[in-house]
Amino acid sequence: MAEANFHFPPSFKWGVATAAHQVEGNNTNNQWWAWEQEAGHIKEGAASGLACNWWENAEADFDRAANMGLNALRLSIEWSRVEPEPGKFDTAALERYRELLRGLTARGLEPLVTLHHFSNPLWLEKQGAWINEGTIAYFTRYVEQVVQALGEECDFWCTINEPNVYATQGYLMGSFPPGQRDLGATRTVLRNLLRAHAAAYRAIHHLQPAARVGLAHNLRIFDPANPSSLLDRLVAWAQDSGFNRSIIKAVWDGWWIPPVGFRPALSMRRTLDWIGLNYYTRDLVAFDGGAPETLYGRATHAPDAELLDGGYGELYEKGLFRALKRLSKLDIPIHITENGVPDSDGDQRSRALILHLHQLWKSLQYNLRVQGYYHWTLVDNFEWAEGWSLRFGLIELDPATQERTPRPAASLYAAIARGNALTSGLIDTYAPELRAKLLPG
Ligand code: FCB
Image 1 (cartoon, protein in one colour):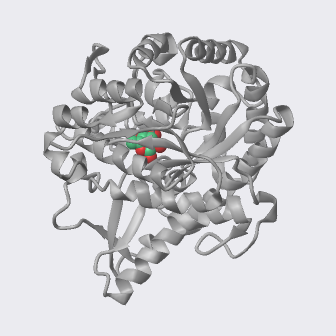
Image 2 (image 1 turned 180 degrees about the horizontal axis):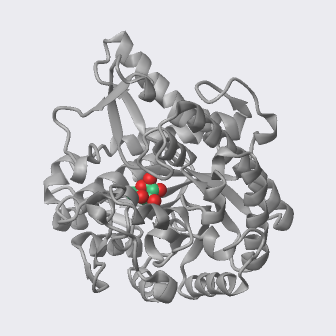
């Protein structure tokens, strides 16, 4: 039987990723909490509630991550805790974050801190949040406060998580607050988020010259459903432009491109020290004349695709390599800031993890500059509009009792991180059906 171990570089970061609102609990002062209280917004009428109780006791889960042999963890700062009212900064909240970051470092987990991950303080949302240009200055002021308070504990910052997802889900698809369906508003929000990123990039470097500042981009693959159809190819290209290319063009080349805009944005050029990739799935896009809001594309799946829970899409691991190859054109370090699968009964996660890490390994053989992998996520958490229906955790959570039960992929991921390798032994133990594919001969 063929034996092969897929090794990773010595300083590779093995982490898990989270976001404040999804794990902290009782974030009562942001727009998501308010949105959750109104019927019809969250699947099964769920709410974040106590979430994973991190505000009280994230340390218990930090212990779990450290015991798995991980060496990195991505979390986010909740703006509404730090600045509960405009211009009033809560030093006790900042102190709690400092304690959390110290706790991570003490356990050998390098913190990667996101400054905006979907949630806004209620006071900001009430005045329109990212539809207004004025929010860029508010955000910069908040970022400066955070970096001043926490800069001793962290130099690795992610300004904004997935500007494309925030803008499209909130302003085009209507599934995130404020629930709008307006292409014009979507463009405005996206532009303001990216300008805020650029402003934050400069502000952080001013306070902390050696900081490593990036953003997390959700790169979704859009392939034409029928590659020989010109219309399918056109709409797949248009969706890719709107969702992926326009973001990278803005913060790297300093250009707004359609559909987001059509003019230079030179002050935004090269505002990345590294880029974060959040990769989950791909769409096969078919032309649909009745869907102007999605640029005339309709998402379908490959007929033979393995599908994920809750209509989440295809398990398409090759997209990870394709996305990394694409981002590597920037020639800056890449961190996979999120990757995972919704899988409540835990029967796909180990296979998915092995397949994706094999693609990551392959990207390293091509000398792509990937330096870290942050699995989404450690413990099941509040999955936005999907509530508790989609379970992304290596560890299962019963939100009512806070009881945690590791899924098989938790020990798999731990073994990979500890050995800094994906071994044939692990493949045989956790997903023997993959042997023929990954270890031929
Ligand atoms: C990403 C989000 C993250 C989580 C995962 C499943 O788009 O950044 O908060 O919801 O999807």
